[in-house]
Length: 186
Image 1 (cartoon, rainbow, N blue to C red):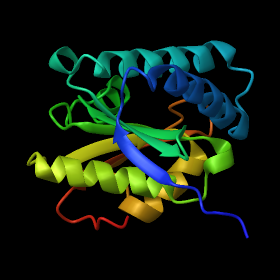
Image 2 (tube, rainbow, N blue to C red):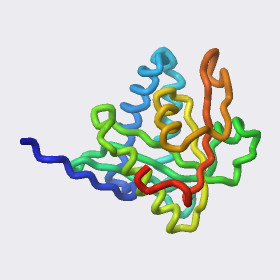
Image 3 (tube, rainbow, N blue to C red):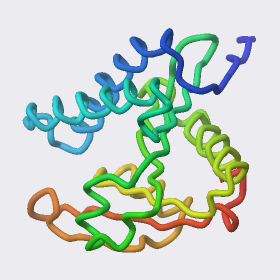
C-alpha cells in the first residue's frame, strides 16, 4: 500500500520562486498543447513571463497588491493560485465593469498532479483568506476550454462570454463570484 502524499499550502516564499517559475513553464506549455495551440510559441512565452513577473511582484507585498499561495505535495511545488488587481483580459472583456474587483488567477497544477483535489484545496484556502480580509467578491477568467468546464461546474454561469476572443471558434469567459455564497469545499 502506497503512503498518501502530504499536501501543504502556504504563501509564496523566495525559496519557492524557482520551482514556481518551472511550474508555470511546464503547466502553461501543457495547457496550450492540450488546447491545440502549441504552435503559438510567442504567446506561450509571454504567458510564462507574465506569470513569473507576477510571482516576483508578489514577493514584494508592500508594492504589488498580489498574493500567491503555493501547494506542495511532500515538499514539492505542485500548484499555485493568486489574488490581485483585475487583469487586462477581464477589463477588456467586461468593458471595464469589474475594474475594481480583485481577480482570482494563476491557478496552475502540474499535469501529473491534476485530479487530486489540489486546485480545490487552493481555491478553498484562498476563499478563506479573502473572507478573513473582508473581501466579498472576486472575478476570474479563462480562455482554456478544459478550465472553463471546471469553472462552470464550480462557479456556475459566467458573468460574460466573449466569442472569437483568441481567434475563430474560441471563447473567453469571465466569472464574478461572491465569497459569501461559495462553499469552502468548492
